[in-house]
Image 1: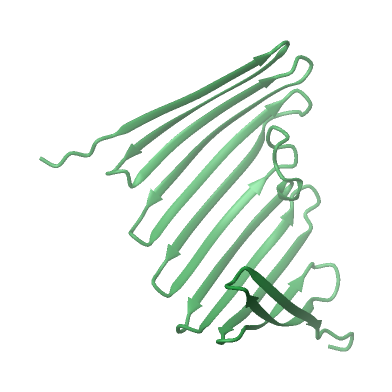
Image 2 (image 1 turned 90 degrees about the vertical axis):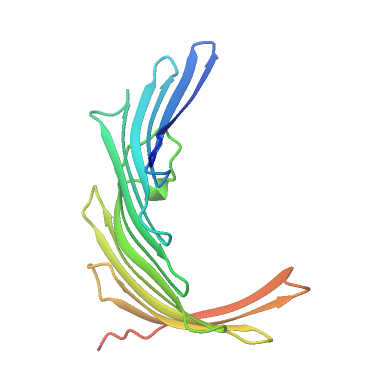
Length: 219
């Protein structure tokens, strides 16, 4: 018979000091020969006048040997905000022999979390694709495109960038172009050039980079 065992892992932690209490638990279920992992997390913090809770579920699926899918969804609630605050992340990654690509979508509300999130990631909705292709031993090409949206204001910024890196025996050369549109003023177009040099058995790296805008008022 072919068995498909399911493994369940439970972790929990409780910390208490005076009137403060922090508690958390995480349950993980492995299935499909450990190709799929389902997890759920719950955290509660009670500091007397201020309380906060966070609950999340996430799924990680190994689609093929080179492809994986990750999905996360969470809600938080604290005594200083009204209603529950959401966060979501969906990511698909392909890691081929010469080609790599990552597609993603994420959204984090302004007041989400337990005051541990990076402020730059809050109040942000983002969707994008990152790809790279190794042409040969010396040359690699990369491309990135994404859209940032500030949830509270609706402001949008679109960015697209393409560049290459070429390894020489004495240094690494790079070049590319970038396009930025904030939908408030004229889009910005830039050319990028740089050189990297490593010394002392790669213990020291010297970098020189220049980004030149080629946008003009008449263009």
